[in-house]
Amino acid sequence: MPDERERIISAESTGPEEEEFNWSLRPQRLTEVIGQRELVERLSISLEAAKGRGEPLEHVLFYGPPGLGKTTLAHVIANEIGSRLSATSGPALVRPADLLGLLTNLDARDVLFIDEIHRLPPAVEEFLYPAMEDFRIDFVVDKGPFAKTVPVTLHPFTLVGATTRAGLISKPMRERFGIYHHVDFYPVEDLTEILRRSARLLELEAEEEALVEIARRARGTPRVANRLLRRVRDYAAVKAGGPVTHDVTIDALQLEGVDAMGLDKHDRQFLQAIIEFYNGGPVGIEAIASTLNEDTDNIEDVVEPFLLKIGFLKRTRRGREATERAYTHLDRQRGGQGKLF
Image 1 (cartoon, rainbow, N blue to C red):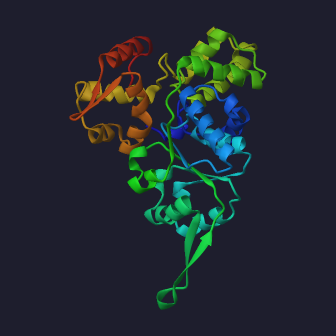
Image 2 (image 1 turned 135 degrees about the vertical axis):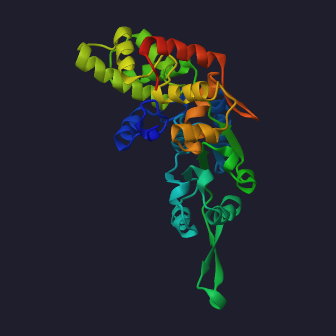
Image 3 (image 1 turned 90 degrees about the horizontal axis):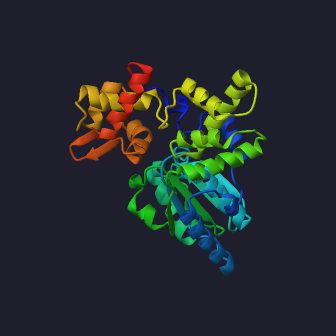
């Protein structure tokens, strides 16, 4: 399998150009957020309560698959509070000193956003504990017998953490978050509404049936939906010379190799490996990874969540199994497109 960023149905950002495009379409306030209704309602209540008390919002942890809007929600929180957001990621914070400048530059009620927070090094994580609990940090100056700890008081702030692997966050870290929200895949109806909004902002003429078709193939992920909309828009402009119609959309997505369930050839290869090499399973993840020459973490984080969601894959104590739905879908695809490998 290629790098996940190379796949059109990847939930990861493919680069700065796409990030700039996505920012132009992202909601700025809670009232503009489409979908995730229960999450939005609970978050709205927490924000109103905090503003009513004149206090910073409790620390928030968003967890769920990539591309579902965790970063967007962090920016929405900052906008709702009327404060500034400072963003970083777990892998970027190698030493406690990397976090020191961020924390001391925060003003009252500012938001610090840490993406991939499960990847914080233990030393950095422990340095963060007193900042989250007491809004202070203990900075060590000098070394050896001359070392001393200097306490630094911080302005009250809100930490927003985002992770795709909540199980890898340590218990002490989880306990310091007051608010937990799971960000789940979006239903087709919500993705269609997101695409309507995107088409409107892009001044793009698109049929309702075309938007629904894109939503069906977007793997429940807004980032993927907007990326597919861009590809269909380009195809319509070059090949059809007009608006985005349902037929044009079908042709464009067929060219991109995205089937009716939102699977690309790499998803189909993953399922086909289980079926053809391991008789449908159960089979261990390491064996599948070796067969496909793929990293196990990438399979668990990127490939499997959506296949589990749509019922094409089962995880058991003995390993992975392809379901009857996966057999039916692959037979249909093979009939129309030939051999999958």
